[in-house]
Image 1: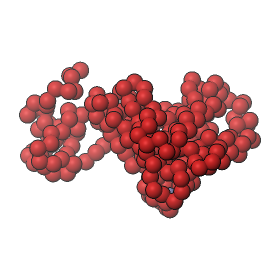
Image 2: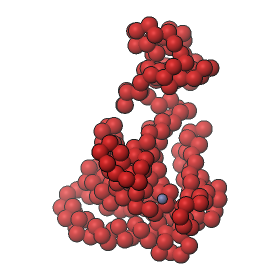
Image 3: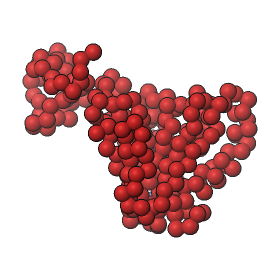
Image 4: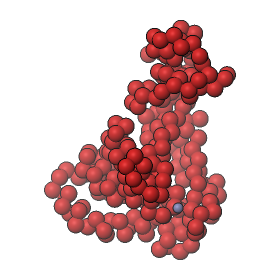
Amino acid sequence: MTDQREPSSPEDLQAALTGGVPLGRWNEGLMFEGINPTPGLKSASNWFPRSETVGPDEMRITFMGTAPFIRPGQMNTSILIELGNGEKIIFDIGEGSVANYISAGHALNELDKVFITHLHVDHYGALPYLYMFGGWAGRWHKKLRVFGPSGRSPEFGTAHMVEGMKQMLTWHRDAFSVFPVGQGHDVEVNEFDFRDNGGVIYDENGVKVIHWQRSHAKDGASGYRSNGMG
Ligand SMILES: [Zn+2]
């Protein structure tokens, strides 16, 4: 396998760009002048899900939902980050977004890290589903990990929301206990102080995520930034 950090040869670039069809134009589609595609890129104009590798120093960001209202073809907010080391990190998990994860070929049991920006339900409505069906689908060897802000008082925090979710799912959890479970029904909640601007909420395998306060409706709303693998 070639080292993905090496610059592509002109032949590689031509082959990757055109797929055999001589387009000959670099700065079209996803490309800009002066920016070269990475070796994993199959086309400058189109992206083919699951066909391109993420390089060691790259991240792929996919919007799986972006709107507060759900309708066919438009889901509540969820953003997937795929890193070169194979890690997948989710920012928000709005209602309906799971359909897009599955359509893009992501197994539910691989989606085990969810960062929630704030507790409007269009940003976490699919969490109960991911929790139950991710566990059922084979997330037996690891917990579901949820990261999210505190609120002005404990009942407005992420931990309180997760506790309520687990109570809501009491019947379902018991029903699914007839299947192999392992750690599939365990949730690790990482609630951070929303006032701790720039605080590191995740730092593993060279991947860091920091958070800071955002002005949105109520105390607790947070923004995130990840350095990827850099
Ligand atoms: Zn909101």
